[in-house]
Image 1 (cartoon, rainbow, N blue to C red):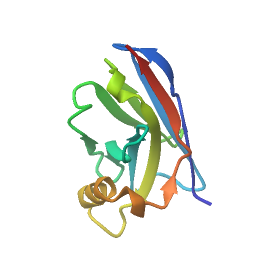
Image 2: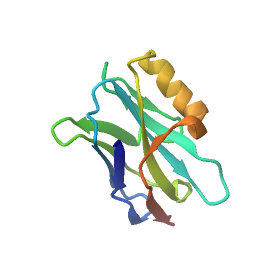
Image 3: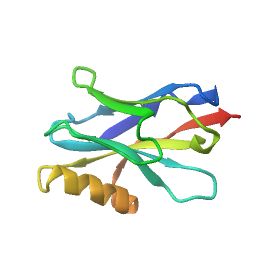
Image 4: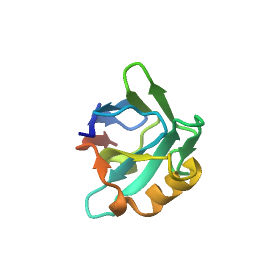
Length: 133
């Protein structure tokens, strides 16, 4: 059974940093796109960042570009999202999701995940990030 466990959220002051973790069980991250999403109260779930294991490519939405780093620890089967210089508008529940890239180009897979998160079937349970101003 494919499972994802997201953790690392918490309360942080504006300008601070957090590192979120997404650990997989039941499968390995080989040939997968692993993406972070967030959902603020009353808003749609939106993509934040992604990494594709087939080619090591990293993707960032403009609103986190330059202040976030996504990385993977193959030994721990864990993807990390380090977020720096956090802003109040970063307050949201953060989720991780995974899609295989064996049937489709990794970049296309990430684009599809970001455009249509409702179609993703493998989600972690979410971790709350609260940024106080």
